[in-house]
Image 1 (tube, rainbow, N blue to C red):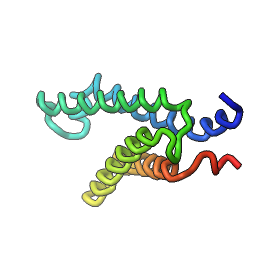
Image 2 (tube, rainbow, N blue to C red):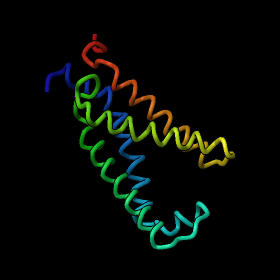
Image 3 (cartoon, helix red, strand yellow):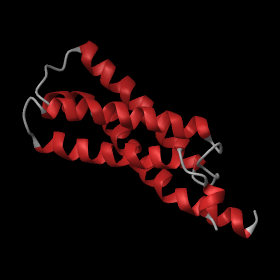
Length: 137
C-alpha cells in the first residue's frame, strides 16, 4: 500500500473501529443476555421477544465484523460505498427512532443512545459524500 493510500485509510479507520466496537458490544449483550435485556427495558421475556432480541444481536455482530474487517479499506465517495450506505441507513434509522421516542419522555438510555446514533449517522453521512482523494491535498 502506498503512503498516500495508507493516510487515506487512516482517516476512516477510527470511525470503522469505533462503530465495530459499539455494534459488537450491543451484539454480544443481545445474543448472550437477551432475557436480562428485555427485563431491564420493562418487557416480559416471552420466547418470541427473546428470539427477536437474539436475531437483532446476531445482526449487530455481523455489522461489527463487517466494519472491523473493512477498517483498512479506503472509504468515502465511491470507495466501499455499500459498506458506508449500510452503516448510514442503520445509524440514521435507529437515531430517528430514538429521537422520536424522546418525544414521549426522557430517559438516560434514550438520550445517550440518540446522541451516539446521531453522531455516527452524521459521521457516516459525511464520509459518504466526501471524496477521500480530494481531502488528501
